[in-house]
Image (tube, rainbow, N blue to C red; front, side, top):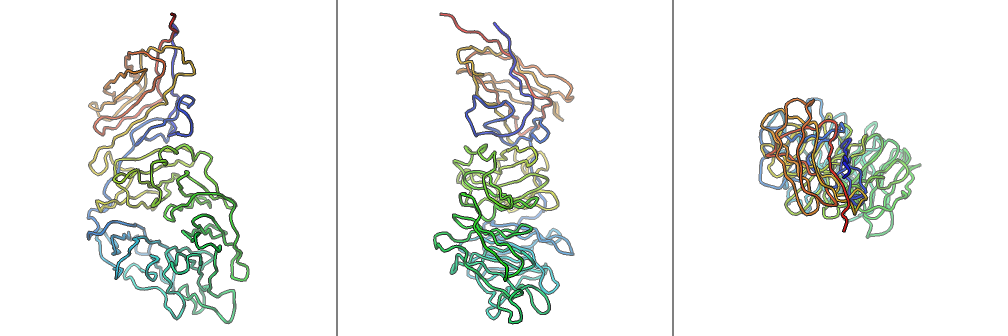
Length: 475
């Protein structure tokens, strides 16, 4: 018999881009609620209530947004047909969409009008609403040609751009350039100069390819259509240029558009994509979550960025949400599960979440999901080590693991052949101690699953090792 070691030198993230047999042991085809940000493996943190009181009313939670004012931030939530704002920990109704919102979708944009900061809310079903931190009123008017029922909003070159008008699905609007008595609430023509005028343009020609979102980078406005992407460059109407972006991508939700470092990221059914300023394409590692996305819905995905990580909500089934977490520096994916996620938002480097419980939560905080246990696991690839005829007899699992509680247990399960060895291991309090778990059973393929018990938290330092003996049967 030959004694061998299967080493996991570091833990990186999820990889579903290839068959498990050839995968690096640093990746997992099936993991959730694990933190691998430093190459070690630990149970992720949960979330805690950021605001003690739930959002009032009974309408379903649809969107959440932080609005930054000189008096501090306001958290704005659309629940059903009602907009609520939280000021100093207290929720208040600020606006009701009379007649209701059949689609229940809105977009937000911050802008200054007449020296006052406003949050603009576009629904695509009614006129834009503007909120100054105190009161919410209707934006614009028919006289200034700014009463269109648009949904998608973005500030670019000091003008307000908008789209999503159901009567004109290919139309992109822009406001006048503020100055003098002009404001972004006026979208009409300026007789004195075309360069400060408002206006509009039709983007593309196909009625079956409507605008589904817009986003701003430092030097261009991105216009997402159902089956194509365009961009607008230039700083005034006389030199505005609209051109199609090279890229064959699947449809994305406008709520998934996230800018970071003058790049735009977004989620599609085919994986995480990026616009780099010139072209749009899936990320080189987009296929690492392909199996997860295959059965999930991204039609209503919400996106946010906080502390170098991208976060995207997905709907895994009718009653189950998840968050795809992507570490941009380490290029590593992880899934977070066990909670609902109606919307997410980032503010001051932290991620916030709201769900059907109607509470706003601070993410990556605490040891539970507001009292619900965190169920974490990490499974290594199932492999035969490219030695299909070799029988592997498991002998031991060694790792350096620790917890903050001597009662915390780690569950180690080794699947080999048709058998499984399940061990409950109480972890030491010191990370310098090496834990050795005796194993049994033999077969030609194996995998290791590490999970927590009862929502407990643990951390592994310095990887792990599976020791086994191997031989070939002789007839």
